[in-house]
Length: 348
Image 1: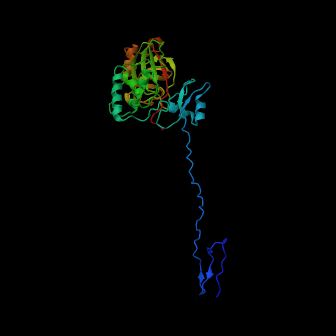
Image 2 (image 1 turned 120 degrees about the horizontal axis):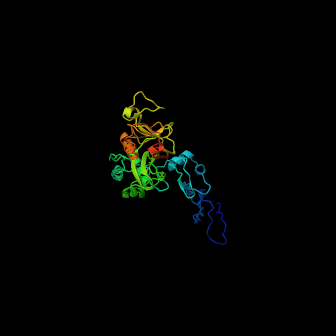
Image 3 (image 1 turned 135 degrees about the horizontal axis):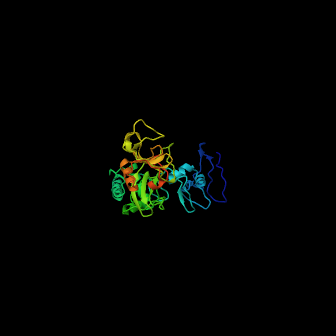
């Protein structure tokens, strides 16, 4: 018989876990306890995703510094000069000054200088605006608005004229409901003389192309009337000038309708765009009556107004009884200023 073979473990009596043979020849494994503890394996640290990097908000308002130009501001903002002018409703001839601010984030339907929305207010707000505007202009001859809740071009024409007469920034955009500007217009009971009016003249006519209105006044004393106009369309622009009116033609032989030399028609009548009792102020450009006066530039260079309004202007000037054409500057007696630039607020 083969004896089991084992080794002492330091003199102890516990057999090692080595296999041995039994008497029968089977393999026997010692039943002594075995240390099965496994040392823990450290887990990798969890991966924490880095916070997403966000671009800083765009700088939407730029302040004019000394020596700045409009084109330089546009270049720094990465927009075109035309975009900057349109966004800020400025004329290319306007001068800028240090401290003036410009909105350089275009096309976001927001005035980034004031934070006001450029979108149309809700109809119920527009209804109130239209009622207030009708009351404000009731003594100034501007045609009353249809109170329909639509902040369309006629409503914006009146809003623009109110801004002119109240010393607010002049543009023909929507009037933001609940804004300080709206509160100023609602609180007004009369209009002041607009900036740009030649108040040193005893009588003056201001044609504002931004608002598409004609304002008449006397010196620095008062506004006489505010009338809708339509100035020259693209390609036939009305020129921004300051001049004395130099010719008046009552055209009494044709009920006041005078055929244009530059754009003649076969028959003088209100429907063909001819000139009703024109007052000339700049070569062939005149203030005259016409049948169609949209609130945007649609003429061939003149400033149109309705025949009724032209008669009111002539009566104010004391020319309503005149039967012959005159070139007498002193007899006509009015200084004309054309200013501004029309920007379609609905254009992309």
